[in-house]
Length: 279
Image (cartoon, rainbow, N blue to C red):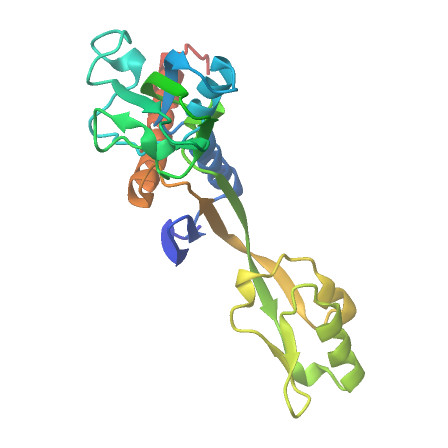
């Protein structure tokens, strides 16, 4: 197996695509599950509604507040169960967000996530334009909310990413000299669902340079070429796609994944050593 290697194939504000080499399918799936369930992030967990003149019930507003993604600082805050206060709520494990709005206009007023005022300027909604509730003229809403770190395996509102998926890196080997009839080449171009093949002006069959971005290993080209085109997954190499809503920076996210993974390995080794296994 080749050494573990990570390369960035694509990076935007909300998406990161990595080429991961030297890793088994079992390990990359373990990393995927850690990303989905075990990276701590901030989310509103307790809501006190002091005034609610809106048409929505208190419980509905509370639920909507809990699902607002919050930027997270893992260097400052601790999980409540790991905090010295025992989870009762202190500046090291809890953030307060408040919202007090009165509609003094003659038209309905929309209240957004950006109207939440945090006692920590680093822990704020990722997007200030998430709708919470609408109130009519002269109506009022007063809310106190408390956010804590949590894990998605306890509730989906603490999920650190929006989505994550991996797939094999495809290897497509094309020898154009094997195709004697133009009809064969046209069939390959026509049958590929991702349009990865093209014909040049002189009727030469070409494979797109960035085919690996879109190839799903459907084997259509292999079947329709009667094996003249070779298609296979590259061993121990995967394309990992991570979609984020911005609660954590990608660098922090990747570091947390491997930190948690190593902790699980250490825990497994410790428990294994404690077992009294007869040889």
